[in-house]
Structure formats: C-alpha cells, structure tokens
Amino acid sequence: MTESPISNRLHWQCRRGMRELDLLLQGFLECGYADLDESARAAFATLLDYPDALLFDYLLGKSHPSDRAIADVINRIRSAAVS
Image: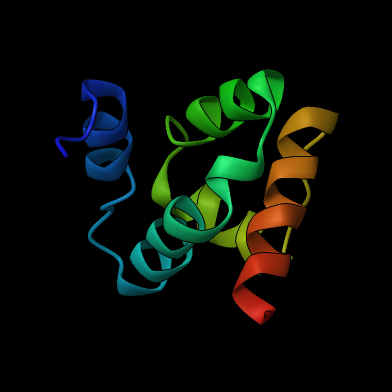
C-alpha cells in the first residue's frame, strides 16, 4: 500500500537534522499521530514549522508554548516517548 502525500510530507517534515528531534517526532508520527483528532493534527503540522531550537526546548521541557493546542501536542509527543 502506498502512503498518501500528506503522510509522506509529514514524515519528511519530521526529519529535522537533530537526532533527538528526529527520534521524538518520527517516533510520534509512527506511534501516536493516528490517535490525534483533526485539530490536534493541525497543531502538530503547525509545530513542525517551528525552528529546531524552539522545538527542542519545548520537547525537553525547557520552555512551554503559550498556545494550548501546541502544548497538548507537545505533551502527547513527550508521553509517547516515555511509553
């Protein structure tokens, strides 16, 4: 079965060039993305537009996004990494 263009695009966007981010984002795409509703998927897509340094700080808990939808997705990514 061939992946849809959206899945291919998201997979590509999860490749960041920083190994830690690659592992977190690609792992979540494979194991947690399917559980997201439409609004959370939109927040995830928005999150992928953020610079690597900001993503890294959010995912490691060094800073916290003010946008609640983004914060929820960050928490889900972090939770998926622990499980």
